[in-house]
Structure formats: C-alpha cells, structure tokens
Length: 113
Length: 112
Image (tube, rainbow over all chains, first blue to last red; front, side, top):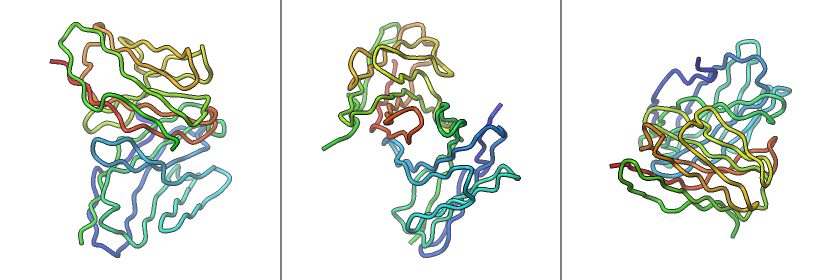
C-alpha cells in the first residue's frame, strides 16, 4: 500500500511560469515532509521541508504548502527555470522525522525555455 | 570539503557473485542509510544505521547485508540471494535519525 503518492508522473511548464508539484499521503501519523530533487544518475538533493505544525514554508523560489485535513502537500516553484528540470520526490516520516522516510515515486518536471 | 561518497559509479558483476558497495561520509553524521531505486519507482529503504555497531532492516533487506564498524563507513553487500540486484543504489546520512537525510551520488549495479 503506497503511503505517499505522486499521482502525476510528469509536468511540463514554460520558463518563467509557476510549477506546482503535488503529493498526497495516507498515513495520518506523518508529521514531517520533505521534497528532494534528482538529476539522472545522481543522488537526490534536499530542497525544502515542512513540519506539520506549519502550513507553509518558503525558501527562495521554492514554497511548500501543507494541507493536513486533505493529507496533501504541494511544491511551488516560481519562476521556473530550465535548470529546475529534474525528477522531484516527495517524502514523509512520523514522530518529528525520527521514523524512516517514505518516498513517493517521483514526478518528472520539464521546464521549457 | 564535506560530503558523501559512493564508489564505484558503475559496477558490473556476474550472476551469483556477491558484491560490496562503498559509502563513506565525512560529515560526522551518526545515521546512515541505503536505498534502492528502480525505474519509475521511489526510493526503497534497504538498511539503516542510527549509530556505530548497530543497524536495522528496512523494507527490502532480503538478499542484502551491511556493517557499521566505523562512523564514517556503511558498506552494503549485495549477495547472490538477492533475486533482482540490478538497480541504482543510494547511500544517505543524517546528523541523527530526526534530521534531514543527505544523499551520495549513487552506484548503478548491473548484474549480467
């Protein structure tokens, strides 16, 4: 049973526009969420995280929104740049992050010049 | 220059042979992890270690073994018992088990 779901396998946007990547989770015990970015044949790079005590966290062009009642989080990238083209993984864990991370299957973002 | 290193980048082995993947970190992190990524799949946890001389099985530990004799090193052995060993293997570390995990560059293992 997949506890972290990234239902759209890919997204294509124009440079300068907003990219919105979505993630749903089923385990109500998850209270810490992260986004990772991954280029082909490389390890994932940590982007941004959010604790369940918040509903928004912002870092430069990246903002993560958390809707606990809907068990949904999203990553907004504004403005999108061609270098943002990569696979993005959503991950979640419980007990303040002390439990093991559970990853979604990833979403491929393509930003067209 | 601190970081996590994995070697080699690409590894080829014959079916039935054991192979050991290296993971080293100089970040002074206590916790280390091994994940496997298959095409179209997320990362799945193989083994993790919260402290030296201690490790726990993850979701897909069968056919794998690890050791944690030093804080800096967490090698993964893919044994002949692993039925489908061809995959991209990722090592990660974190300050503690409540902290953000940082990943190495990965090793692509191909079993012929």
